[in-house]
Image (cartoon, rainbow over all chains, first blue to last red; front, top):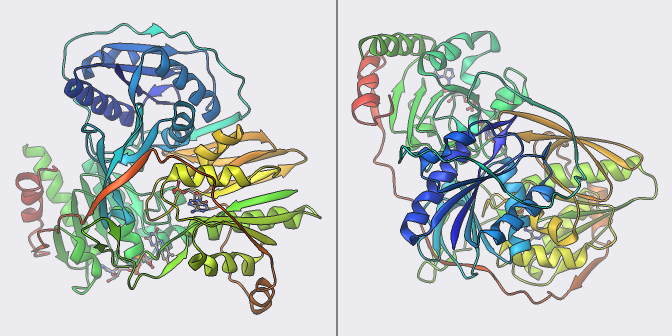
Amino acid sequence: MSVLVFTESLTGKIKKSALEAISYGYQVAQQQGTSCIALTIGQAEGADDLGKYGVDKVLQVSQVNGFDSQVYANIISQVAQQVGATLVVFSHSSSGKSIAGRVAVRLDAGLVSAATTLLNGDTVNKNLFSGKGIATYSISTAVKIVTISANTFPPKEVSGNSVAPEAASANIPTAKIRVKETTTVEGIVPLPEADLVVSAGRGMKGPENWGMVEDLAAILGATTACSRPVADIHWRPHHEHVGQTGVAIKPTLYIAIGISGAIQHLAGVNQSKTIVVINKDPEAPFFKAADYGIVGDLFDVVPKLTAAIKSFKANN
Amino acid sequence: MKILVCVSQTPDTTSKIQFANGNTELDKAGIQFIMNPYDEWYALVRALELKEANAGSTVTLLHVGAAANEPTIRKGLAIGADDAIRVDAEATSSYFVAKQIAANAQGFDVVFFGKETIDYNGSEVPAMVAELLDLPFVSYGSKMSTSGNVATIERDIEGGKETVEVDFPFVLSCAKGMAEQRIPNMQGIMMSKRKPVKVVPAVAVNNTVAIKTYSLPPVKAGVKMISPDNVEELVKLLHNEAKVL
Ligand SMILES: Cc1cc2nc3c(=O)[nH]c(=O)nc-3n(C[C@H](O)[C@H](O)[C@H](O)COP(=O)(O)OP(=O)(O)OC[C@H]3O[C@@H](n4cnc5c(N)ncnc54)[C@H](O)[C@@H]3O)c2cc1C
Ligand SMILES: Nc1ncnc2c1ncn2[C@@H]1O[C@H](COP(=O)(O)O)[C@@H](O)[C@H]1O
């Protein structure tokens, strides 16, 4: 018996969400009294450090280039069988979501995606209806699969052990998907993984005013986001659009500036731990979903807030 | 080209969510059901564009759900699909749905999905179907062009994009950007009434997961208002109380 964690990389580096998956797998393995095994596929910078997060073993299949869910699912299923995995853990990320369903079919395993609690026996929780409900699932199969909700299980360093990665033996099928190009925005934490997010809406009046949003984000080390109309009218790039039709996020801090808080916007952000709303309209619906609110003109409040955080950071 | 589009229906986002029967099921009273937006706006419309670019093609809808869901299928036909298959069963789990889709998806050149349903937010069904059909799967597509037997697709990844090439047949899930929403016109609505909907029985499936209970999320403590002239207070609260700074 063991817990197998698919430890994913993006452009060759192990992702933060993969460390969250390992912490999840480690905690379940501890509870079950079994071992936690990490599997990396392709180039995986950072694999040497995984021992810190509690894994007992790191297996690698490095001779794979480019992402093809069919190839990955095949390899992961082989390794899961070799190590007698009773639980396979994935991040709820673009690749994790693309593979988990395939592995579930291959291993006859029950799958629950975007889990928000540790697997306890055969039960696990997840959020439904964009956070408006919670379901407790039971998984009735011998092998269980979960993908875990992002920013929910913080990576924890639990040991000083170093674990040397070993090559796993697996047949590698031929890819049918040919990856031509992978581009990621450099130097910023991608929105789904961001801990801190500063987001702005139509209240900004125009793209030329975004400097103050970026200043606030910079002093916080936050990622910037926006409401849908702002992306639709090209004030901001599409990948910043959060909400029901955009990216769903779950940061520890979400600062919403000049956003009214329409239900479709809230659907993608209402699971943030702490929500701060800055809006000149005291009736803006967003205040009902907020933890802290400021009624005021954003052009006045935002630069003041940036300055206050700057001086807080200088003194702490 | 034979094109299949899998469509689901979900509560409208603005619905108030409550549970019934000792928290074991969704309380459907007062809920307005709609076609899942990703299926309607992106998967179906891009499928229709593909049909329009390839003379002699057909677009078939596939829905797993009870007879009460017919309006969702009719809407898809009104937007432009040629015909539909309805598997006559409650969709009890992703795996159940995937098995029904796979049983009816033979012989198509491409199977379109939305990227996820907005109710159970699973993003599980398309990958399962791809595996059951032993086909390549391109997820979260936001742009597609085709040339002969090859499709070039841009897909969303965390903080970026990936461009891939794949040969037909394949399974595709669609995200924002793939197409622009189409509103059914009067002629489409009239024609949809005469388009064939084939009703087929479900294949037997052993469910691998089940929902034991539902609950509502804890209510927020309520918003703390801070004066715009005292942003320092907000910084203090974020540090001491929320502990996010
Ligand atoms: C099916 C569907 C899906 C959708 N999906 C999404 C989605 O994924 N994401 C999304 O964001 N939206 C989505 N929407 C749109 C959504 O309903 C709202 O229209 C949108 O979120 C509004 O954006 P906004 O808050 O930026 O703009 P507005 O609603 O115009 O609000 C601007 C706010 O700024 C405030 N303001 C103006 N000037 C100032 C100032 N000087 N100082 C302080 N405050 C100021 C105003 O009081 C107002 O509250 C969707 C809609 C539909 C129908
Ligand atoms: N009951 C259903 N009938 C047909 N297609 C479905 C059904 N449920 C889900 N799908 C398809 O699978 C996609 C992903 O659903 P999910 O895995 O539930 O998030 C949806 O966008 C639909 O294209």
